[in-house]
Length: 222
Image (cartoon, rainbow, N blue to C red; front, side, top):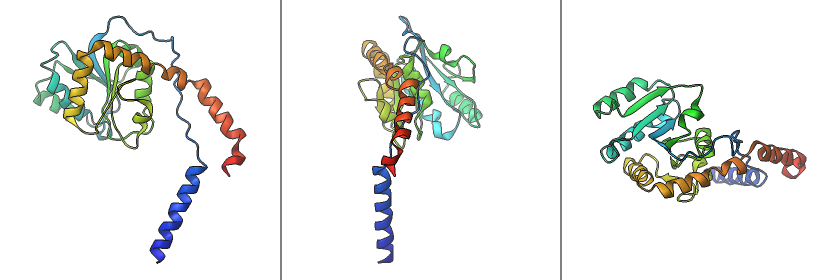
């Protein structure tokens, strides 16, 4: 009975907190016209994130290996540093992709370096609200993301409309999605253009307004 009572109280507490909560997303600092969608894209697929198990670049490399022969002119570029660098280098060598998968490290001009890529892929197992994905969308890049926990990517991407969501940790699904985007350029560009609307929906001005609105109505959340 005691356990049941505690569970019941716990559920009620969280239910009440949920009713009194509000979700305010991170803002996008990229203006809609800061980076124009390029007419010609470089034949690269990009990923941005520290080299850590959370980001699961191993999944992305394995997925790229599955489509590398179909798209021999495309390379994969991974931006970021971390403790898995040597592990990823070994994986790349085992797959004989030394000249196709490049670990770029960090850069001061990240947005400029990825703005004309053909595809952005977020391969993470879990994320909060993924800023790297938000920035890629703001650039108008065709984007693919795993359905990383607890669901931040799914809040940003309406799969098939402004990007693609694939099952977490599925090499097959990710490879198929990458193949689809690279083979169907018109649809990919349409998704990239739709993704760029995040510059408006998550602009700094709109997010600040939501914070101001929240602060002005604090009494409603007590």
